[in-house]
Image 1: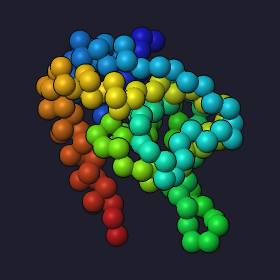
Image 2: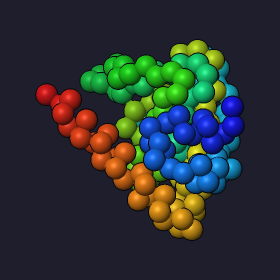
Image 3: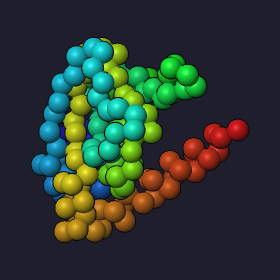
Image 4: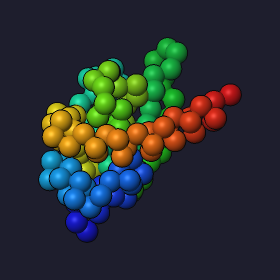
Length: 141
């Protein structure tokens, strides 16, 4: 599978043209993680977006005391860290590989450089981000 096909599989990039997907894909790297590896740590600077191509991860958030609560389990085709592409706020959760995992990674730096030269990419992504936000609001108690 071509890197642009991997990105196209993520709803976040579903409205982008093949040309734009290729441009973004050229800025990605593939990283492998072993079971138990912490991929991102809650509270750390958010610097990249991750798209899972193999394996599974658990999204965890610190709770009261020393415990952590599981927020989600994600697998191939799912992604995390999308907000890191737009802001550099600290991570709101940790992500830990629950089995050997491979991710395509796009850094905020590379993404922003691409947006500066091709701002229409952001325009194409806005409806997708808006739908995700609406869904989150609907799911809130």
